[in-house]
Every structure is written in C-alpha cells, then in structure tokens.
Image 1 (cartoon, rainbow, N blue to C red):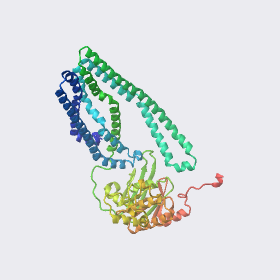
Image 2: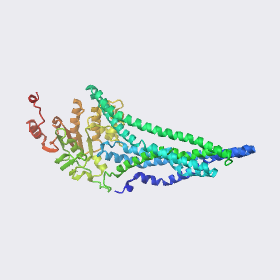
Image 3: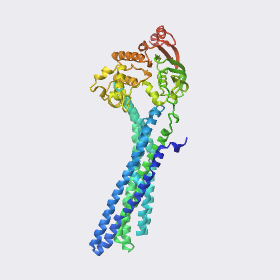
Image 4: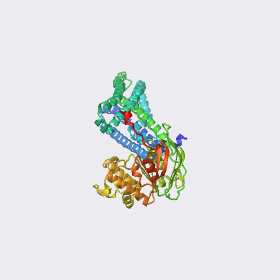
Length: 574
C-alpha cells in the first residue's frame, strides 16, 4: 500500500506549504529585528554617552521601540498563522478520522479515542511556541555572525557553548528514555488495574476484595513511582547541569568582554550587546530538549495515525443503490473465526428468515448467539459463507441504505449525550419529530417518555447515566424502530427489564410483526419467544435444532439431550 497516498496528515500540511513558507520569512524578519536592542545598547554606551547628544538618543530610542513593536506584531501574526494551520488540519481530518476510528473499533475495541488524541498532539505541536523555535533556529546564525563581527574570540566561545548545550540536550533526552518508557508502561497497567477496581466497586465492596485489589494496583504503581523517580532524578541532574553551565557562561562572557575592553579589542557597549546576542543565539539550543520531546511525540502520533488512515472499511468504488429491502434474511453456511484467538465461533450456520417474520435464537453462553446477531446487521463479516438481505450480500448495499433498513439492540446499551428524542432519532441532524414519536409508540415507550421531567427533550446525561438500565434499554429499543426499518435484531432485549417492561417488549414484537418488520431476537430463556414464528437453537457455534416455535418448544420441554442445559449432580457434589 502506498503510504504517502494514505498519509492524510502529510497531504493536508502540503496544502499549507505557502503558510509555512510565509511563517519562515516572518521568522527571518523577527530575528533581524532582534538585533535592534543589542545595537541600541552599543550605540547608547559608545556614542550617545560620549557625545551627550540628546537628539541621537531620541532617534535611537524611537527606532528601537518601533522595531520592538513591529517584531511583536509579526510574532503575533506568526502565532495566528500556526493556529490557522492547526485549525485547518482539524477541519480537514477530524471527521474522516472519527469515522475511520468507529469502523476500526469493530476489529480493535481497545482503540478508543486514541486517533483523535494523536491528531490533537499534532495540532498542539503546530500551534505551540515550539514550532516557532524550530523556525527561528536557522536564523540563529545571524546572531553568531554578528558576534564574530564584534569579536572573533567571543564568537568562538559562544559557538563552543552551543555545541555543549546541544550535547546536554541530547543527554537529557536519551539518558532517562528507557526508564521513562518502562515507567509509562507500568503506569498504563496501574491505571487499568485501578479503573477495573472502580468499575466493579460494588462487587469489590460487597465481597471484601478492596485490600487484595488495592495490593494488585499498588504493585504496578510502585514500579511506576520507582522508575519515574529514577528518571526524574537523572533528568534533574542533567537539567541542573545545563542551568549551571548557562549561568557560568554568562559570567564567562561578561568577564571575557571586560578583559577584551581592557585590552582595547572591544568597546564598553559591546559587553551588553554580546550578552544579549549570546542569549538570542543560544535560545534554540536551550529549547532543544522541548523541541526534541515534542517532535518525538508527534512522530509517534503520526505513526499511529497511519495505521488508521490505511484502514479501508469499504471498497473505494461506489455501490449501486438497490431497491428498498423488504426484509428477507438468509444466513448461508456461515462460519466465523475470531481474528485474535483464531477460534471458530460459528460453524456452517444456515438460517432463513422470510420478510416480515419473527425468529428467536437461543442457546447457552458462548454458543455464538451474539456473534450471529453482529453478522446479521453487518458489524462483522463472516469468515466463510454469506449473510444476505433480499438476496444481496450485506456488503453489496450502500452503508447509508443498509443502516436505515436495520435496527439493532446490543447487549451493552449505550445512549449518547443528548435528549431522549435525539437518541431515538439516531442523533440525526434534522430528525423527523413524527417519526420519533411513532418509533416510541411502536416500542411501547411513548407513555413512559411523557412521564419524564421534560418528556422527549429530557437529557439522558453522559452515556445515558440519568436513566436506569431498564429505561436505557427501552429508549434504545425505540431507536431500532426509527425511520422505516425492515430488519430488527434484538440481543437479550429483556436483560434489564421488569415485568411491565417485558410486557411492553412483547407488544413491541407484535407491533413489528404488524408492520411486516423482520425481527430476530437473541435470548437465553425461551419464555420470551412464544410469539415468534420460528426458533433456532445454537450450541458450540452450530445449529442443533431449528423449526416452528411450537415444535422447538415441545422438544425443549421434553428434555432433548442436544439442547438440555447442564445439570449438576447434587448427590455427587455432596
């Protein structure tokens, strides 16, 4: 794969090349104007004081002030240019990156929001003063040249000092790098362990696991502290050495300047000018550590982003818009192998759901029910076989058309920050109010929503935290009915419902049948499935029983051994 072609960060920044060139030119002018203060100091001490010319002093002061003001304006302009480049980069890439991250999360659930954080690292680097220091660095030669013009000996001393500072900066970055990397890994483990404890606070408290859980977290945290302390101590030693060297250099330059004045090789005003020019010449070298650290972070973020940009969730070609589906679903000899463990979760599953029918899928934990439900809605692609909607494989449909035709209720219910209406409308930019109410009525949740403080405009909080688990499940069910879906897949839709909620769920299933919506319900318990047309029983990733609801229920009731739940021999256990 052509990495340059998929390096969208590089491509976007190339379009900003004129702005970077302009910023580099501005940096040249800023650094030239930086000569104003040392030249002003030399002229005042060497000429104005000796001639006692007030007019000369006034003109020099006006010129110096004008130069400083112009330099300040150019510095502000350069900062604005950097901010605009940073904003442009975000406008150009953030939406695409978010979409790719969501698609990639289906295969890499732990990816989280890291790609957007990586883009933020690059944006922050561009908008930071660090980039200004980088653009100033080439023009630091101006100050070295002026120092050599004033006095060759001073120029040589400052050049050697720059080499020493660069070496100390390299040492400050490289010496603790291994310790910092190890400390970072340990910190990640420590935070993951602690977050796990916090997420399971109820279990930890109820079962007296607080002390052992804290010990497990403490082990990783101690390693983090030990290695971070060592890295910090080493960095402190190098940093103090650098600071001491800089202070000593100032004393040395001042002493050297005085010596040269005594020897008649330099003027009095040149002593102050040399000190100012030395600071400006060495500024990029003083900032070398921050520049290097920022650049390393940007390179790592950029490398991670390339893997996201390389991911193509869909073929590049445009798909034809197929006729609106009616809802006939077929699972044709489907097998699915988990990418990481390479374990087969489904083996040659074949099922058929006619348009407008309802079906139940049951089986013990780990039998492949959730995997099958994800395949039915196109979240995952089968390793072998195919899933079709109205005879067309799911990957032949336009993604927008397929999404509009499908409603999906997963086991883990997630609502988005916003109102109840916005969540039911699938966070559409311009939702159809009538469609929102109709979806809620089909899900038998309309009356409940009206009891909320602000009705449909009630905010659900972050991740739906303002609602109970059962309430979130019922709102998410209404989301499935929004628009004109032809296939609804419900994975454990009653896991958080009370008796009233289950009765509403059953009525919602009947409403779906009345509207000829194909409905597939995944459940552990068959009690919910008395109203479906057919039931398929999964075990070990295979269909072990399938047929009309009544027949399958009778076989389950008769204790068919192929689907019989595991029984415990209590006598043997005793």
